[in-house]
Amino acid sequence: MRKSPVDIDKQNTVIHIRGLYKSFDTVAVLTGMDLDLYKGENVVVLGRSGSGKSVLIKLIAGLLKPDSGTICVAGEEIDQLSPRALQELRLKIGFLYQGSALYDSMTVRENLEFPLVRNSPHLTHEEREDTIREVLENVGLSQSIDKMPSELSGGQKKRVGIARTLILHPDIMLYDEPTAGLDPVTSSDINMLINEVQQKYRTSSVIITHDLTCAKTTGDRIALITDGKFSREGTFEEVFQTGDAEAKKFYDYNFIIDT
Amino acid sequence: MLTGVSHSFDCDHWVLSGNRIALWQIVCMKPASHKYTLYNKLYTTVLSDVYNTCRFVFRFFAEVFRPPYEFREIIRQCYNVGQKSLALVSLTGFITGFVFTNQSRPSLAEFGATSWLPGLISIAIVRALAPLITSLIVAGKVGSNIGAELGSMKVTEQIEAMEVSATNPFKFLVVSRVVATTLMNPLLVFYMAFAGLLGAYINVHQHENTSFAAFFQHGFASISFLDMFASIIKSLVYGFTISITGCYQGYNAAKGTQGVGKAANAAVVASMFLIFIEEMIIVQIVNQLRPS
Image (cartoon, rainbow over all chains, first blue to last red; front, side):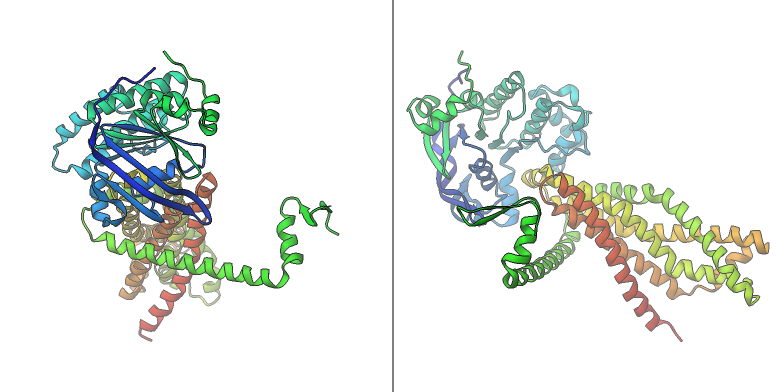
């Protein structure tokens, strides 16, 4: 399914990355990466396993420090921020982990309540409950509010993971392999949900994946990582209809359904 | 001759399988430099471990007094530490008191001094057995639980997810567990001392027909304020050691399920080892303070 056009504000850059380098021991993972994410835009980052996709979003979230280069998120240079300022900036960022990373000793309600209680202490119990129910309804899981994460399917976990990030109304969403390990139908549901989140919450997103169906369905722009930097960038067609060897390899090994 | 060694002549490079390559390298390939490297590596690992542990402890003291406070989580953890260890502590305490009395009787009977049993048992239980045995039980039950739980959270990126959702995982996970264990351990120690004395009383009553009041009156008369105070200090120190070790191991667990097991195991082994060292130091200090 092709993505319907969305309103992207190209005058407003929410993530601005220039000359980003990151290495682990002697292995250089990112070697001079540049990226701009505009307000309201979904950028899909494609690349092979170990190409540094997850490292890129962990750098954006301030979980890792870059070796060199600049990362500006919502106008703030992330590696220059104090721990308190970084914590405040993180309120604007939602992060969906590949394994959802739900707190497995808490129910779905408690998982959603956890960031809310700590970051919006002024809310009354009723207001918190309403917010939780509203967000769960938006991801289509209102009936699972009292379930433990172990009682949920992979797709439901991803939905709760998305709900937990949405509860703080972030401006930027970072998705790490949102469809990994899911069947095609559930993957399609998650892709739709990502688009709904973009439109309803007006979020800008970086989506890490190697699922081309996900890339085509959710991405306004695709960026392909090769050797630690983006080798190709553009719409799905611009990236994959060029005869580029790396892009061709990716395309050939994925089954694309175009309707 | 090493078995399982093959030789490829074209590249002049020994090809070995399994662990033999490491053994071969240590014994034959780099005799002098490897020994140095091994010591150097061990030295660096130990030093960096000590440094990281100290940083972890300092971070705890920096965070514990800083708001916001996680009272609800502290109470939940108090319940986990205290209530869940109660049955084990009761049984162990009772058996310790009963068996210790039984074993001490023949020695005292030789001198016709079995009337000293309540005093002897009380001193032994309050001064040494209760703090030490309770803390070892807590290390086994609570320490391993903390190590495994935090290790599992680390491996499944739950700790990172807390950090990303603008909350402080150290305060929620580490501070609450350390405070709860440090507070609950003295309560468990005194509860165990009571269970131990009860076991001792039943044994004494069976043989000497001593009354409950006489046993406890005699027992408490032998215990000084310093004994009680030292026990409280010991149990606080041991509780802190158990929880901070468990948290450190879990919080820094390596990736993978193997890391969770290692964290749980290291939490128990390291905290038990530290408890014995602390016991030795505290006993020396208390003996210096004790009026001769």
